[in-house]
Image 1: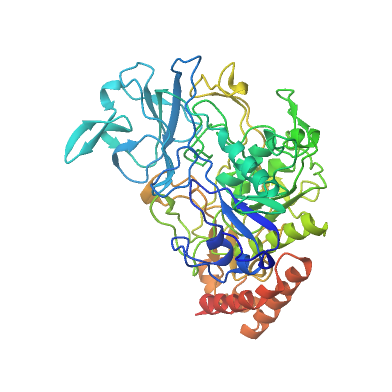
Image 2 (image 1 turned 120 degrees about the horizontal axis):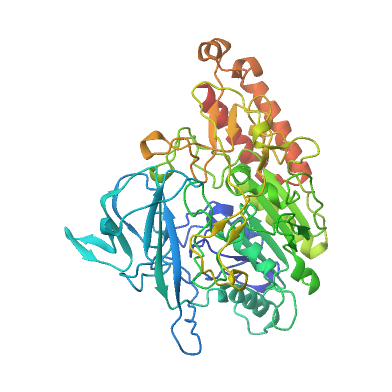
Length: 581
């Protein structure tokens, strides 16, 4: 999407790395309907002259409308290559059969590979109650590669059927033989080469003076891996991406450039367990893993080639629990804060979850049904400011806000055992958080060949999470008015509803919203240790005055744009009315 005339453009391209083949940046930043090509919301990106590109990079993105990379099949001197592939899932209801591949929500995900040798004895299916529990082998006579079609069980190279069905609340893991790997890592080259083409080819269909790579979740991890693997230098050694905005990637990279790569796989509490996602190195500058003695940094290759972009690594509260985000700014042993590069900013948006839920707060659905309502705090307005700040930084060297995240030094980042969440009646708290992993996939896995499935898991990296105040809201980071002037607690996690099994485990992607009692009497009846709304504020006018002050601070500091103040102030009024009705 390009400006109609050169005078309407600002010379900057926002290149979206689409999440599992779906473009979404206009919907997220401008508020448009992602399913309607003609709905661009308030058109903030367009009004500000950005060229917008969403480029397919994932070879197996599911769905007929997905943007994808058509990767060639690799051969070994003309011979077919075979290997082992692994997948897992925890159902939220009884399922007679499951699809091979990774469908994360609905049909969003990756198709991966069909089984190539259904009768091979290396094909196995196991079950266990939790990620670290011992796997139990399911007898081969109890399952087969098949699906039910028109009421009849039919052989299928993309489904597994289990007698008695797959039960909710259990992790099922399957390993099977596959063939014909594609050159999945070509997706990195696609992003690199299009950025270079846009900047240097006089006939480019979407010309730009500057290109900013933008990625959310899977795509943020893609951009971290893109930088780590040295793809920001084009074939002539020129810088490809001038800026990188990697959002909610946590400490992760991903399965993007391996033999039989599975790019949709991530790292969740009860699925995609022990995949090459949250693996060393984590920090932008070089660090040493004291266990393996390996020394490396995310930006080593870019620094050596003098092609370092400006970078925003931004995360929400969820990523510190669900994506080991603390590892991007602490030492590998979890004992100290580490410095970050001058071209990097790390932003922690407190109280938000992996994706912004709808307001008013409500529980998730299906696989995402949690015990508590989700966090409905919006990321939209932070995104607009980040894009504007990145453009000003690259274009004019105007410095963006300094990094804002919890630290070991001031005890705003702590081990799980020191996490001091208040005892709120009816609220269960998590017993664990996702860890960075030391994994061994075999002798050649550093060269991209994973021969051991499942991998050998070594000692995990330390877990550190943001400390909270007496209300349960995080103490350090970028704090929306809803955190500074709260009407409730925005927890970083949400446990699974008992109806979908494993109620002691966290729900993927979600935080929790736990409203305050309205009055002191209500609070005392509930036994809630948190002050009620009436004990905090004299009324609506008092609350909104404090809300406006907090909002003005964020605008002044560059976290929000002045033009968005009115919309956020109105949202504050609606939130008060909802909390006190």
